[in-house]
Length: 225
Image (cartoon, rainbow, N blue to C red):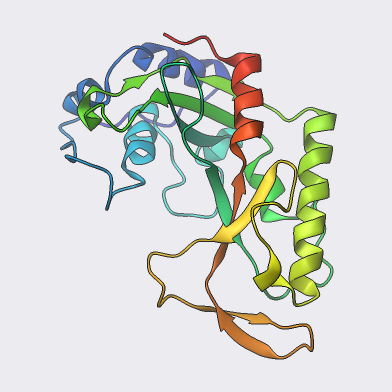
């Protein structure tokens, strides 16, 4: 089966998501002749790429929402059989320089989270990758309250970066967002500035949604298959 064309409407996208709900990753992969890895240790993005393929995402590696024409980002989220998120959700790389004048409204993070199609996958470690089950997807547009929480966290974390305190940021900062290292290995470094304004090299950082927040979203929207 060929990769489908990008969906033209939200309704078409949701219908496609509904059709794969209840299927295993192996069943979906078989439809498109895609090999299933034995584990995801070195292929952490494989599930997301499979779902992008099956649903007709068009952005590829471009810094745009996955369904470019609809302005919708696709996020798979591994959960256990009690619908509890198994890990934080990566959103985008966090810029560590050139932040003067940046606002939440023009941030890449807000752009990524304006509209999200969440696809939960029952993915406990003991379940072979091919047997992991796709659950009912849901489309999320942040409420004013949810966006306010994200904006506050973005501002706090961005202020710390601008003030040269990126190395002091840990998982306790932020109510719903987390900033933490995002690199394939410890030799990957990027430029940042210390509190004296001097440049230094550090690990790249990424913005993640905390599990308490994604659990809150799941509780509001999810019906487990």
